[in-house]
Picture (cartoon, rainbow, N blue to C red):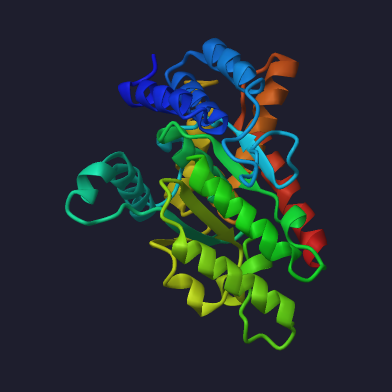
Length: 320
């Protein structure tokens, strides 16, 4: 059931007539319950939260499903589901540990890691990492829809960014900026215009001034496009890479063994899949499991190899 902190935060929100904060805590409890296997109860809480309206102040952005700048979810993924290098695992554990012990750190004048930049090729687990962090901390995940934030009208994007950071301050959660180079592009690039520079300057200012308890995660496929001033504004920078052979094996085992405990991952299968990213390998596993279910047959290595070949052929056409 809900933790003592959850109950205290609910009472505080009620006393302060802060519907938005109350809703956030309800979602935190829903995430906590889903993580502990109480999925029916978690869904009920989510349905109740949808009926909670109004923010504490009219100048605070409401975080609901009708706002196009946010997409809110209550993830249930676990850290053990994230297949990355040991170094990345340890650094994520450090982020989680510091958040859980942030009050202890504050007594010594220190703050926990809250502003994280993740860089890596598509499909290497950046978005999944945001879900894992939200789930492990029992927080809702707010994905910022940058195409709804960045506009062609002068000053409008900066105003929307201010609304987002007001929301970050008022409603604790994990806030995920995907394809972050849409905002964080290098101000020195030849094709940058004055408005783009002002947008980036606004973001840098908001990020530096932010002292909330929320976690801010920005992800990009290409750090070369990012302005160097960004890096010192983030508490941690995680570099994601294509899966190693060991990670490829672990991905197959993670996805297939729960469905077929007798399946063994061969060296040939690992070598064949070694050029695919994490997301593609997971799709291959999902495809072979669906085939097995629909045909009422066992999972075979031959079928997996054929599905991998399909992916590789598709890539060869793309590169041609």
